[in-house]
Amino acid sequence: MHKNVLDAIREGDWFFEPEDVDPGRYRSTSAIPGTKGKVEILAERARTGLPLWHERDRLDYEDAEVDGR
Image (cartoon, rainbow, N blue to C red):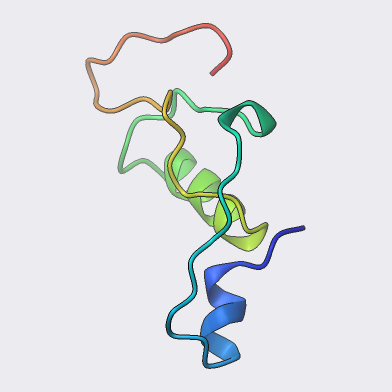
């Protein structure tokens, strides 16, 4: 598990920068932004120290699904 921003705040590390994570190490999502599903995925990423955003995440309602999401 990676250190996450919530841990850094608790520790007073105001200059925390999460480590780079290869997008191949975690899954993208086709959840529509603003939905409960997308928020749950972002929360899980934050808890586990992953970047919030994946380069292949769905960007908007009309964004077509891509394999692997």
